[in-house]
Image (spheres, protein in one colour):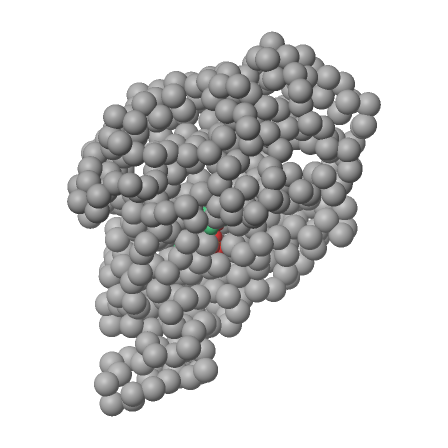
Length: 467
Ligand SMILES: Cc1cc2nc3c(=O)[nH]c(=O)nc-3n(C[C@H](O)[C@H](O)[C@H](O)COP(=O)(O)OP(=O)(O)OC[C@H]3O[C@@H](n4cnc5c(N)ncnc54)[C@H](O)[C@@H]3O)c2cc1C
């Protein structure tokens, strides 16, 4: 702590709750990292950052924030892509990083109970050691937290077969308004005693309360997987192959799309040759299960479909090392594209049969607005990340015309039966576009819910909903 005479009086109360060493104020060497997340080009300074170590401290902090009318912004790994963990209205950033214990892996009932600050990959590796599987795998899994995944309802490549975070959340402890600690749900597969409260908090972006403990369902770890890369000579064909693969009764655990500019960006970023970077697009397809012969049969069916789309010269990974290499490249796509120049990432999602219309439509809109666009993402879910790059555009055009181009992309997405974010959330940056996806009545219901649960408006204000 520093500069005591200029500190607001409530800082001393914070210190009494969490101890001085758990408070990070402007000027502290750690302060800067809490002013940003992974959303492009944003920086907001909170008045203080606190790193509590248990739910009791968080209950007291909520009471203090309500008394002082201070925004309280929960923060996990800070990997969010919609500015959700940023103190856009000042106040206190509440980092959950010290609540990072795996409390119980229940091997009999297939549940794991964790604190919110556990890193997703750490949880996955811990349960895999016991032959269990927690499938949701955002590409950021090495640095994002389970608390952040719940608040954003995170997805990832495996969502196609295994679903997203919401499909695994069975119990939550949440600190609510007034500092009350509620336990919703638990280690039971069936529960209709009251509203489905855990799911209300999934995807609520820290705007309804602070999640302090989580019970997640696990499944048995599949023993084998087969990974394939299919090159295409047109983006349209790659997108069109996706529903056809599914129509043949095969359910891959991942079906990812990367267009050529994305492959080239990875090549440049990692200074290495990337397979099929001379082709218009690739699909990365993975199947998993417990019977190798069944997987081989599925790969044959997929290969037949791919042939119909002139994608015959596929690469099938033969070793675990080759599979890992393919996934490392896929996971580096975001970083690679973002390293090119100023950008804005959109997270469009449509029913997968409308994917070709979405991808071609986005390219058409961007070329009309003079924007360069690079698309990649979870094609099997119809969820494509469209990265709009500033490239040679003037600052003025970028600032004034970009929102118009984005609105057009979102209107197209909604007209195809889709919506404006599949997994990155609305947060701070997408609020202005929400009326494209939701009617005034729908937004009104969410606003009333917010007011009922957070009457003093302290939980992450200015996120997820328009004012
Ligand atoms: C390279 C890269 C790849 C990515 N790939 C994917 C992907 O494949 N799929 C995907 O879905 N996302 C992806 N993301 C986005 C991001 O990682 C996810 O949104 C993730 O769930 C955020 O987790 P976090 O712990 O970093 O949360 P933060 O960014 O810290 O916070 C996100 C939101 O959660 C709230 N929050 C955090 N903890 C709590 C809590 N305990 N209680 C209440 N609210 C809380 C915050 O207030 C904020 O609104 C990617 C990001 C990057 C940088």
